[in-house]
Length: 105
Image (tube, rainbow, N blue to C red; front, side, top):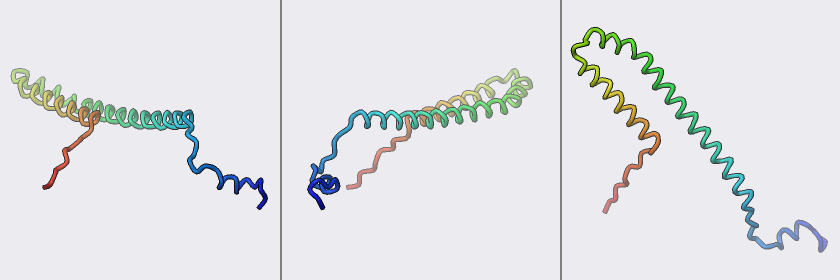
């Protein structure tokens, strides 16, 4: 190999790679954008599923409301339970589930 061999110069160079902050920033921005789109798509899909379920359940709820107008507590209870479940699902989707680790002695 000659003295100006690029391969030998590469091996003789400092083993610590240079840090390119611009490249890191661009890559992290692309990763964040991709994660945002995936998360947005999943939330949109979940919202559409909930809306579809409510639209499908609306005739049954309206029929129950018309036939049992005097006992609104039952329908109100069902709506409250559905609302609590929807809120819990949204809460778990947004916050995630962080179960504590069991520390064994």
